[in-house]
Amino acid sequence: MKEIKSFGIAGGDKRQLFLAKSISDNCYDVQLGGFEKLKSTGSLVLCDMKTMFAESDAIIFPVPSVRADHSINTPFSYESYYIDNEDILLIKNKPIFISMKENFLRAYPQLQSAELYDYSAEEEFAILNALPTAEGAIEVAMTEYEGTISGSKTLIVGYGRIGKLLSNKLKVLGSEVTVAARSKSDLAYIKALGYGVRNTNQLKSVKGFDMVFNTVPAKIFDKDLLMNTDRNTLIIDLASLPGGVDFEIAKQNKIDAVRALSLPGKTSPKTAGEIIKTVIFNIIEEVYR
Image 1 (cartoon, rainbow, N blue to C red):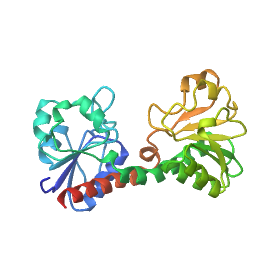
Image 2: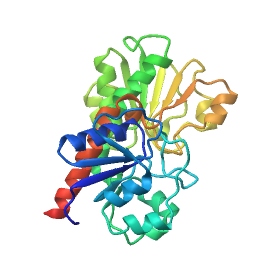
Image 3: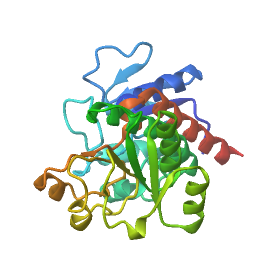
Image 4: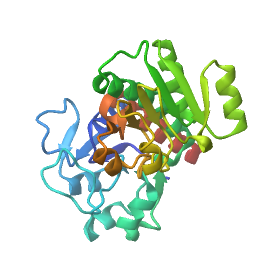
Protein backbone atom coordinates (compact mmCIF):
# COMPACT_ATOMS: atom_id res chain seq x y z
CA MET A 1 0.00 0.00 0.00
CA LYS A 2 1.46 3.35 -1.02
CA GLU A 3 1.48 6.29 1.35
CA ILE A 4 -1.99 7.81 1.68
CA LYS A 5 -2.38 11.56 1.93
CA SER A 6 -5.94 11.94 0.71
CA PHE A 7 -9.17 9.95 0.88
CA GLY A 8 -12.18 9.87 -1.40
CA ILE A 9 -15.58 8.99 0.06
CA ALA A 10 -17.76 7.35 -2.60
CA GLY A 11 -21.36 7.81 -1.53
CA GLY A 12 -23.07 6.68 1.64
CA ASP A 13 -25.34 8.09 4.34
CA LYS A 14 -24.67 10.24 7.41
CA ARG A 15 -22.09 7.73 8.62
CA GLN A 16 -19.83 8.68 5.72
CA LEU A 17 -20.18 12.38 6.51
CA PHE A 18 -18.95 11.82 10.05
CA LEU A 19 -16.30 9.44 8.70
CA ALA A 20 -15.09 12.17 6.37
CA LYS A 21 -14.98 14.73 9.18
CA SER A 22 -13.10 12.35 11.45
CA ILE A 23 -10.50 11.65 8.74
CA SER A 24 -10.21 15.36 7.97
CA ASP A 25 -9.61 16.07 11.66
CA ASN A 26 -6.56 13.82 11.34
CA CYS A 27 -5.14 16.26 8.78
CA TYR A 28 -5.91 14.27 5.62
CA ASP A 29 -7.49 15.76 2.52
CA VAL A 30 -10.98 14.37 1.98
CA GLN A 31 -13.26 14.62 -1.06
CA LEU A 32 -16.91 13.55 -1.14
CA GLY A 33 -18.39 12.07 -4.32
CA GLY A 34 -22.08 11.32 -4.72
CA PHE A 35 -23.41 13.91 -2.27
CA GLU A 36 -25.06 16.42 -4.62
CA LYS A 37 -28.12 16.86 -2.40
CA LEU A 38 -26.06 18.42 0.38
CA LYS A 39 -26.08 22.20 0.66
CA SER A 40 -23.02 22.48 2.86
CA THR A 41 -20.36 20.16 4.27
CA GLY A 42 -18.24 22.67 6.17
CA SER A 43 -14.59 22.26 5.25
CA LEU A 44 -15.15 19.04 3.31
CA VAL A 45 -14.87 19.17 -0.48
CA LEU A 46 -17.81 18.12 -2.66
CA CYS A 47 -17.04 16.96 -6.19
CA ASP A 48 -18.27 14.62 -8.87
CA MET A 49 -17.44 10.94 -8.53
CA LYS A 50 -14.85 10.82 -11.33
CA THR A 51 -12.91 13.80 -9.96
CA MET A 52 -12.89 12.21 -6.53
CA PHE A 53 -11.69 8.88 -7.97
CA ALA A 54 -8.90 10.62 -9.90
CA GLU A 55 -7.62 12.94 -7.17
CA SER A 56 -7.75 10.69 -4.07
CA ASP A 57 -5.00 8.33 -2.93
CA ALA A 58 -7.47 5.86 -1.42
CA ILE A 59 -11.20 5.28 -1.92
CA ILE A 60 -13.78 4.39 0.73
CA PHE A 61 -17.14 2.92 -0.24
CA PRO A 62 -20.10 2.91 2.18
CA VAL A 63 -22.14 0.32 4.09
CA PRO A 64 -23.45 -1.35 2.02
CA SER A 65 -21.12 -0.45 -0.83
CA VAL A 66 -23.50 -1.38 -3.62
CA ARG A 67 -27.25 -1.71 -4.01
CA ALA A 68 -29.13 -4.69 -5.42
CA ASP A 69 -29.02 -3.14 -8.91
CA HIS A 70 -25.18 -2.84 -8.64
CA SER A 71 -25.26 0.95 -8.34
CA ILE A 72 -23.11 2.61 -5.68
CA ASN A 73 -25.04 3.29 -2.48
CA THR A 74 -25.51 7.07 -2.85
CA PRO A 75 -28.61 8.21 -0.90
CA PHE A 76 -27.44 11.85 -1.10
CA SER A 77 -27.26 11.78 -4.90
CA TYR A 78 -30.04 12.59 -7.35
CA GLU A 79 -29.10 9.80 -9.73
CA SER A 80 -27.85 6.23 -9.48
CA TYR A 81 -24.14 5.85 -10.12
CA TYR A 82 -22.50 2.82 -11.70
CA ILE A 83 -18.74 2.36 -11.89
CA ASP A 84 -17.71 2.38 -15.56
CA ASN A 85 -14.52 1.33 -17.34
CA GLU A 86 -13.00 4.80 -16.92
CA ASP A 87 -13.57 4.59 -13.17
CA ILE A 88 -12.01 1.13 -13.06
CA LEU A 89 -8.82 2.53 -14.61
CA LEU A 90 -8.80 5.40 -12.09
CA ILE A 91 -9.10 3.26 -8.97
CA LYS A 92 -7.78 -0.21 -9.72
CA ASN A 93 -4.25 0.61 -8.53
CA LYS A 94 -5.35 2.41 -5.36
CA PRO A 95 -6.29 1.03 -1.94
CA ILE A 96 -10.06 0.53 -1.97
CA PHE A 97 -11.97 0.09 1.29
CA ILE A 98 -15.34 -1.58 0.91
CA SER A 99 -18.04 -3.39 2.86
CA MET A 100 -19.58 -6.73 1.91
CA LYS A 101 -16.82 -7.71 -0.50
CA GLU A 102 -18.73 -10.57 -2.10
CA ASN A 103 -21.59 -8.29 -3.18
CA PHE A 104 -19.16 -5.63 -4.38
CA LEU A 105 -17.23 -8.05 -6.58
CA ARG A 106 -20.45 -9.55 -7.89
CA ALA A 107 -21.28 -6.07 -9.16
CA TYR A 108 -17.75 -5.19 -10.33
CA PRO A 109 -15.71 -8.34 -11.04
CA GLN A 110 -13.23 -6.17 -12.97
CA LEU A 111 -11.84 -5.16 -9.56
CA GLN A 112 -11.15 -8.74 -8.45
CA SER A 113 -7.38 -8.17 -8.60
CA ALA A 114 -7.50 -4.67 -7.08
CA GLU A 115 -6.19 -3.79 -3.64
CA LEU A 116 -9.50 -4.36 -1.79
CA TYR A 117 -9.94 -4.23 1.98
CA ASP A 118 -13.30 -5.26 3.45
CA TYR A 119 -13.54 -3.28 6.67
CA SER A 120 -16.99 -4.75 7.46
CA ALA A 121 -15.43 -8.23 7.67
CA GLU A 122 -13.11 -7.21 10.50
CA GLU A 123 -13.96 -8.61 13.94
CA GLU A 124 -13.20 -5.18 15.39
CA PHE A 125 -15.93 -3.64 13.21
CA ALA A 126 -18.55 -6.10 14.44
CA ILE A 127 -17.61 -5.66 18.09
CA LEU A 128 -17.57 -1.86 17.98
CA ASN A 129 -20.92 -1.74 16.14
CA ALA A 130 -22.63 -3.97 18.71
CA LEU A 131 -23.02 -1.09 21.18
CA PRO A 132 -24.74 1.43 18.86
CA THR A 133 -26.88 -1.43 17.52
CA ALA A 134 -28.02 -2.34 21.03
CA GLU A 135 -28.74 1.29 21.88
CA GLY A 136 -30.55 1.72 18.56
CA ALA A 137 -32.69 -1.32 19.30
CA ILE A 138 -33.78 0.23 22.57
CA GLU A 139 -34.61 3.47 20.74
CA VAL A 140 -36.79 1.48 18.32
CA ALA A 141 -38.49 -0.22 21.26
CA MET A 142 -39.20 3.10 22.97
CA THR A 143 -40.78 4.37 19.76
CA GLU A 144 -42.81 1.29 18.81
CA TYR A 145 -43.82 -0.08 22.24
CA GLU A 146 -46.71 1.69 23.94
CA GLY A 147 -45.46 0.96 27.44
CA THR A 148 -42.19 1.62 29.23
CA ILE A 149 -39.05 -0.46 29.15
CA SER A 150 -39.10 -0.49 32.94
CA GLY A 151 -41.47 -3.18 34.06
CA SER A 152 -41.67 -4.82 30.64
CA LYS A 153 -40.97 -8.47 29.92
CA THR A 154 -38.51 -8.95 27.08
CA LEU A 155 -37.08 -11.92 25.23
CA ILE A 156 -33.75 -11.70 23.41
CA VAL A 157 -33.09 -14.45 20.89
CA GLY A 158 -29.37 -14.98 20.41
CA TYR A 159 -26.51 -14.31 22.81
CA GLY A 160 -23.82 -12.98 20.53
CA ARG A 161 -22.21 -9.55 20.69
CA ILE A 162 -25.48 -7.64 20.35
CA GLY A 163 -27.47 -10.00 22.55
CA LYS A 164 -24.98 -9.66 25.41
CA LEU A 165 -25.00 -5.86 25.38
CA LEU A 166 -28.73 -5.55 24.76
CA SER A 167 -29.69 -7.89 27.60
CA ASN A 168 -27.53 -5.92 30.03
CA LYS A 169 -28.92 -2.53 28.98
CA LEU A 170 -32.54 -3.71 29.11
CA LYS A 171 -31.99 -5.12 32.59
CA VAL A 172 -30.47 -1.83 33.77
CA LEU A 173 -33.56 -0.04 32.43
CA GLY A 174 -35.76 -2.26 34.59
CA SER A 175 -36.96 -4.87 32.11
CA GLU A 176 -37.44 -8.49 33.12
CA VAL A 177 -35.10 -10.10 30.61
CA THR A 178 -35.12 -13.63 29.24
CA VAL A 179 -32.48 -14.79 26.76
CA ALA A 180 -32.72 -17.67 24.30
CA ALA A 181 -29.51 -19.33 23.15
CA ARG A 182 -28.24 -22.69 21.90
CA SER A 183 -24.81 -23.48 23.33
CA LYS A 184 -24.44 -24.92 26.81
CA SER A 185 -21.85 -22.30 27.74
CA ASP A 186 -24.14 -19.42 26.67
CA LEU A 187 -27.07 -20.91 28.58
CA ALA A 188 -24.86 -21.22 31.67
CA TYR A 189 -23.70 -17.58 31.43
CA ILE A 190 -27.27 -16.38 30.91
CA LYS A 191 -28.43 -18.19 34.03
CA ALA A 192 -25.42 -17.01 36.05
CA LEU A 193 -26.16 -13.37 35.16
CA GLY A 194 -29.69 -13.66 36.47
CA TYR A 195 -31.65 -13.65 33.22
CA GLY A 196 -34.47 -15.98 32.36
CA VAL A 197 -33.28 -18.82 30.15
CA ARG A 198 -34.77 -20.40 27.04
CA ASN A 199 -33.19 -22.88 24.64
CA THR A 200 -33.56 -21.62 21.07
CA ASN A 201 -33.75 -25.20 19.78
CA GLN A 202 -36.78 -25.76 21.99
CA LEU A 203 -38.49 -22.44 21.26
CA LYS A 204 -41.95 -23.65 20.25
CA SER A 205 -43.98 -20.73 21.59
CA VAL A 206 -43.47 -17.14 22.73
CA LYS A 207 -45.96 -16.31 25.44
CA GLY A 208 -46.00 -13.67 28.16
CA PHE A 209 -43.52 -11.23 26.61
CA ASP A 210 -44.13 -7.59 25.76
CA MET A 211 -41.20 -7.42 23.33
CA VAL A 212 -38.93 -9.81 21.49
CA PHE A 213 -35.55 -8.84 20.02
CA ASN A 214 -34.21 -11.30 17.47
CA THR A 215 -30.48 -11.15 16.71
CA VAL A 216 -30.14 -14.49 14.88
CA PRO A 217 -29.83 -14.28 11.04
CA ALA A 218 -31.90 -17.41 10.48
CA LYS A 219 -35.68 -17.81 10.13
CA ILE A 220 -36.36 -18.41 13.83
CA PHE A 221 -39.79 -16.79 13.68
CA ASP A 222 -41.31 -18.90 10.93
CA LYS A 223 -45.02 -19.61 10.49
CA ASP A 224 -45.15 -22.19 13.27
CA LEU A 225 -43.51 -19.99 15.90
CA LEU A 226 -45.38 -16.85 14.85
CA MET A 227 -48.69 -18.68 15.15
CA ASN A 228 -47.67 -19.52 18.72
CA THR A 229 -46.63 -15.98 19.62
CA ASP A 230 -48.90 -13.62 21.56
CA ARG A 231 -50.55 -11.18 19.16
CA ASN A 232 -49.80 -8.23 21.42
CA THR A 233 -46.05 -8.96 21.47
CA LEU A 234 -43.81 -6.53 19.59
CA ILE A 235 -41.09 -8.32 17.58
CA ILE A 236 -38.00 -6.31 16.65
CA ASP A 237 -35.73 -8.08 14.16
CA LEU A 238 -32.11 -6.93 14.37
CA ALA A 239 -30.64 -9.73 12.27
CA SER A 240 -28.93 -9.05 8.96
CA LEU A 241 -30.80 -10.06 5.80
CA PRO A 242 -32.62 -12.30 5.18
CA GLY A 243 -33.45 -11.76 8.84
CA GLY A 244 -35.08 -14.01 11.41
CA VAL A 245 -38.78 -13.20 10.96
CA ASP A 246 -41.26 -14.19 8.27
CA PHE A 247 -42.70 -10.69 7.88
CA GLU A 248 -45.32 -11.77 5.36
CA ILE A 249 -46.84 -14.26 7.82
CA ALA A 250 -46.56 -11.69 10.61
CA LYS A 251 -48.45 -9.14 8.50
CA GLN A 252 -51.14 -11.63 7.53
CA ASN A 253 -51.75 -12.45 11.17
CA LYS A 254 -51.53 -8.85 12.39
CA ILE A 255 -48.45 -9.51 14.50
CA ASP A 256 -46.52 -6.33 15.21
CA ALA A 257 -43.08 -6.98 13.72
CA VAL A 258 -40.41 -4.38 12.92
CA ARG A 259 -37.33 -4.90 10.76
CA ALA A 260 -34.57 -2.77 12.29
CA LEU A 261 -31.57 -2.88 9.95
CA SER A 262 -28.43 -0.70 9.91
CA LEU A 263 -29.27 0.87 13.26
CA PRO A 264 -25.84 2.43 13.86
CA GLY A 265 -26.23 4.45 10.66
CA LYS A 266 -29.75 5.55 11.57
CA THR A 267 -29.56 6.19 15.31
CA SER A 268 -25.90 7.02 15.93
CA PRO A 269 -24.22 7.98 12.62
CA LYS A 270 -21.43 9.94 14.33
CA THR A 271 -20.27 6.92 16.31
CA ALA A 272 -20.78 4.61 13.33
CA GLY A 273 -18.69 6.85 11.07
CA GLU A 274 -15.90 7.06 13.62
CA ILE A 275 -15.95 3.26 13.94
CA ILE A 276 -15.41 2.90 10.19
CA LYS A 277 -12.49 5.33 10.38
CA THR A 278 -10.92 3.47 13.31
CA VAL A 279 -11.13 0.11 11.55
CA ILE A 280 -9.79 1.46 8.23
CA PHE A 281 -6.88 3.21 9.93
CA ASN A 282 -6.07 0.02 11.81
CA ILE A 283 -6.06 -1.90 8.51
CA ILE A 284 -3.66 0.66 7.06
CA GLU A 285 -1.40 0.43 10.11
CA GLU A 286 -1.39 -3.38 9.82
CA VAL A 287 -0.47 -3.26 6.13
CA TYR A 288 2.37 -0.81 6.77
CA ARG A 289 3.71 -2.78 9.74
